[in-house]
Length: 88
Image (tube, rainbow, N blue to C red; front, side, top):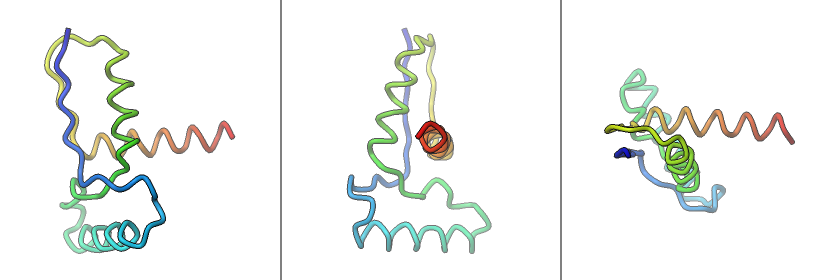
């Protein structure tokens, strides 16, 4: 019915507290601040968050071609985290 193209930033390992993940996330946040938000698409995102967004969009049965940017995926991930924290 439709084509969904996902363009995430760098994918993080499943272990969110690993040293390399913490370092990479801090480095990209600092660079993004220096670039005044111009590097948001390079913010790392967990692979499971991208998978959640893919499943969510697949269940909507939307016809046509849809492209989801890293910014959209980051926003979707943040919304899911806030829903989970409110439910728990």
